[in-house]
Amino acid sequence: MKKIELPCMDEKEIKSLRIGDIFYLSGLLFTGRDEVYHRVVEEKIMPPVDLKGSAVYHAGPIVKGDNELVSIGPTSSIRMEKWADDFIRKTGVKIMIGKGAMGDKTSAACKELNAIHCVYPGGCAVLGASQIEKIENCIWRDLGMAECMWVMKTNLFGPLIVSIDTEGNNIFKPLLSS
Image (cartoon, rainbow, N blue to C red):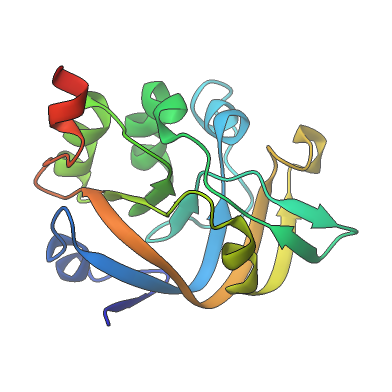
């Protein structure tokens, strides 16, 4: 079983992954979806944490109180397509995780910036929550529970399936072309 420690500063480790490969993550995992991407790219406001070499999970978790994670399932990554290249460039994120496809713009950015996109199985939101050891922080709470950036610690998060690799190969390309 392949496990990547976050933050991943070894580009060789990310570059070795190809579409269809399965792996797990360990370390700090950040959530970020439409409003986080919009804030970073459109509003030019950087989060008060270093995302270089990290993973951003396109998810809107359900959190009870401030730190009890109930579920954390993936949301459709295609919604982040228009911001993904600039988001990767500005933050240094190496791994994006979500549900379903991302398009040509993200594929090109992954190739240029040595990043990848992965899918986490839909319908596994409670499993995902069980894989999070602790909520470390909540950033930009003003965006609301689903849209703010949650900082979570995990020892084994996955399985993750590489859908776009650092060569720009996209496992969903045949579906996007039809």
